[in-house]
Amino acid sequence: MFERSEPDFLGKPVSQLFLDPLPTANSERAHGEVRFVPANGFCKTFRVMATTLSVPGRKAIGYVYTFDDLTEIRRLERDLRIRTGWRL
Image 1 (cartoon, rainbow, N blue to C red):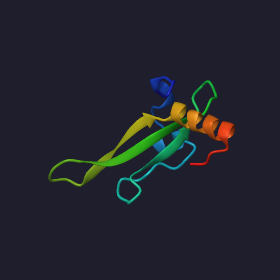
Image 2: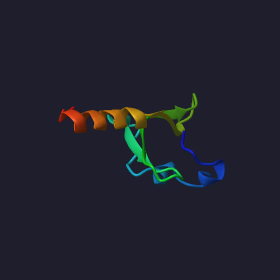
Image 3: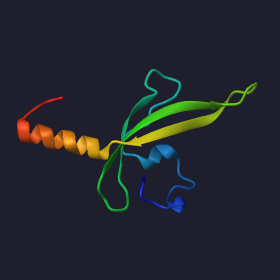
């Protein structure tokens, strides 16, 4: 999905991997869209949902981010707008 190898991600904060800020699990904005540039240089768009990772009896220990690749959907929407002048 991200078209990169594991070492490209290790040791890096997840927030630095994307062009846009990630949603936060503890707010009303727990989902959104972010852009990512893989090694081939073509920007990809992902829907991302943030969820707090917690263990019973303890406070939150982290976050889980779920990604859906929207790149092709956004490309088709852009093509439709260009051809028809249609706005979403």
